[in-house]
Image: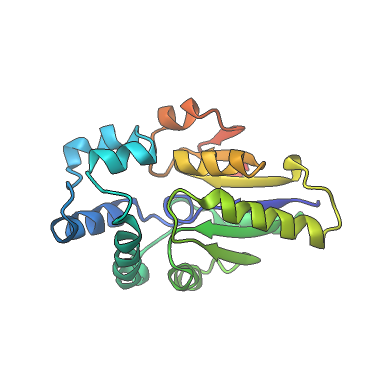
Length: 208
């Protein structure tokens, strides 16, 4: 099976949602933005990424510095983190079918590798990371181009999938010309994901 499946990391593979919220709130006073209160969480889960930034009063100029600090704080949490769902059997089945698997994330590559090792999930062919929260499509396009070059195939979107738990993942997949798979077990609500019209939405990893 000549197919490439690229996964988001936070929320999709690793159960980092509440850890990320705790870190975001921890840094709020330092970077002078609004905290996410638990009673606001349901509302926030229904928002697009840009709307969340506005809601929290995070200016784009501060975003790279905040992301860098989040990565550093997340590194301390890696030993305690577990998968969002029991995804290993599905990853193994996809590998056995001949699929190439990758990860594209805004988390640090070192954090991802440490998580995969501690949870016996070292099944991915590559990991790509970007500091740019809203520019995953740029890296995904490069991944797609490289994949098609090495496979001597045309960039057919039916053979390239991006799997993620956030609206921005669906946006990135569409902008990169890949099929989009939204997972309902991560950050954004099912309603928010459906509103972006992904090609597929799944509730269990085996549906892949």
